[in-house]
Length: 211
Image (cartoon, rainbow, N blue to C red; front, side, top):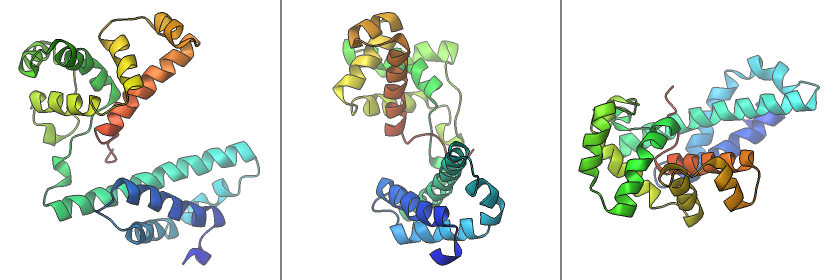
């Protein structure tokens, strides 16, 4: 089947399939993910040929990265459907968290970790201002469950990420001060704080693939 694909697509399909199969190990088989992707690209590759054959190297690489992103979303949707089917739940039962929501919850999460405050108290404080948006019907307004999820995922982070998130969202340290601590530029400190937040998001399941 790979002979029917553009060479770039023939390379992308197994690479994306391997990545998703590792992420959902135990729930999907790599060959099944590959088959799903082959079927998807075979029906659409004609509309991507101009992008894949772009003479300008930078533009071509950009086009390939965008296509790879689409393929990962397709593969992840398939994997999530398979996981839900085998585990006996609906994909609508999954909850996803954007980084803005996580950032708003972090002071309360960190207070729970550092000061030992109970999350039920944080729930009452947050409900006053509603500093979040509902990502999926599965959240169902159960803010306490969300707080518990975020706290559990925060505790799984490496120590460097924990320190950065504490400085940024609990100690109220400025980016300039974080940059001094890290001995780097302010822009670099900002990126590292954002990266730590995204790794927390990944612990929570990453961005929703359903949009």
